[in-house]
Picture (cartoon, rainbow, N blue to C red):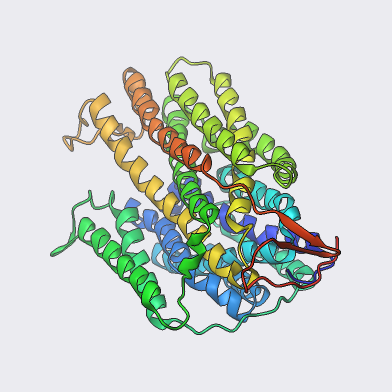
Length: 508
């Protein structure tokens, strides 16, 4: 552990930037129609506004986590925050969709630099027996940001214009930079050799895999150009990633991804768990928002406000849960939270009919709030509790990468399922395209088709409801956390790992 007298101000400083990053993964969704109108862009171009950000965010995470170990998480965090903030300004000033896509790539890269450093700093400045409370704040931030994004986006787009979903990041980024510069400690660095082949293999493999999954629906899971198909990209990505793992296994120097991390059962299982969470959180909102807007006629802001009970309950309980998991085995809380999320989603599915009183949807939304509170902090704390400080950045990079890959898988899978269920539940489009969608009927759906559309959305939401149950099953196999030895002011896990640092840690 590091000698940090005031870890809590450092945590809150990091939360600002982390919150801003996560909001930008969802805030653009409600602004897409206005961006199309304002920049005279087609729908495929606007899809790239989100896809470019997700790709640039997901691909470098393994690398940037390792760079934090080498050059210091504070330096990397501040660098990423500057890149992200300036790119946000560039996004808002974009005069055409091509410029906006390029700016989003830079913005995503800035987010990738920042994200692993937040968990790495928490892991290094909080002793294991107090880390749960800190991860509770981190978890609340992650949970609430996924909900606040659409709400804030709707308000800004309706009131000021689509540009302001990006301009709002500028003052927030400046404040976050000043606070991080002041309160985040300069932690010791660890000398690492730079694994160039590992960097190239991981970047290429992740890019091919994520691009193929993310853009599969755009190309109807078929040919992209010439002999290149969506599936060939996905398969090539898996092959390259397999080569990356083999290289990490036989690399005689210092690998980019220490496979020894996965010797810890909790780290391995927590990564599976967070993948199912990323999948589910990304996937369930799409059919729900479609139902609210297409069938019930809610505006983007109104439909996002239906998730307010989830945001309020999750934000209020997550810090409490964080304190509890320092004293009890977190696997029970995690499993309960994941099961509750599945229950809430199946409940939503059963309510999806045109004549259901709209207020009833607030009830499963509240259950989702309890579920979120029991998921984020216990999972992240379980993943990082036993990591030695010199591997904090690498472990954080892996954890955030798997979460982001889960989100991409969820986005692609729910898009395919929605199209399939609409084709089954609605008649063919009147324009002869054979695609059943609201756009095929002039942008609105005739009332006679509301029941079929609702059924399709209700069936679609069952997929993330089922996937999250896999995460619950995995959580039941978490090992009991290692006991913590307290040597006066020193708190370290009881471990013989030579990497564990016995540095004095003052009580905050």
